[in-house]
Image 1 (cartoon, rainbow, N blue to C red):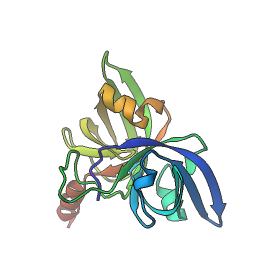
Image 2 (cartoon, rainbow, N blue to C red):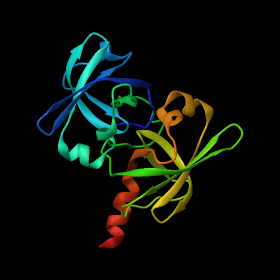
Image 3 (cartoon, helix red, strand yellow):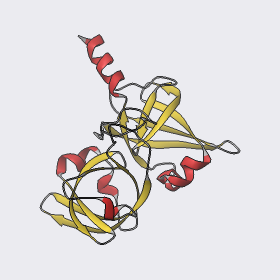
Image 4 (cartoon, rainbow, N blue to C red):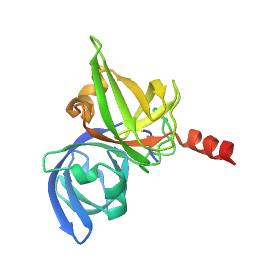
Amino acid sequence: MFTGIIEQLGVVKEIRHEGENIHFSIESAFTNELKIDQSVAHNGCCLTVVELDNDQYTVTAIQETLNKTNLGDWQVGTKVNLERCMVMNGRLDGHIVQGHVDTTAQCIGIEDQDGSWKYTFRYRSSDVTVEKGSVTINGTSLTVVDSAEQQFSVCIIPFTYEHTNFHTLKEGSTVNLEFDIIGKYVAKMMNK
């Protein structure tokens, strides 16, 4: 379980293929606080720490994960949003995030709003967003400002822009989406 509040940016340092699996070695300032078998969200995708080596740790993505996320696009040097699993006695600053990516989306617009940025995304799934509702983009908990069928926008403040990988996004960039879990349950019940 996560909150969508990014702790820091990690950097992909090594990529190793083993069959259909890919092992990613990530450099992170909190590596020394991790342990083997711990869950960490990487651009919103929950992966298990399988190896520790000084300031780097390794996680493994299976084919199912690669099919549903943007992890297959990563290269050495890619900046990755990182969040460790939440502590149950802590504040829930973002919203309830499972670390289970629903789909990817493409950035179709970035508007500089003189002190903030408005990002617009298009996706292909039956999931919905609602204005002022929550959505997770690359692991970052955000509020939807515009919502349409298979499209929505969010606004980014300077702190989020600088401390997440939003500053690396361009039109055409692919991001991971996790829709609000409460909204998903409501939609499923309404369809019954």
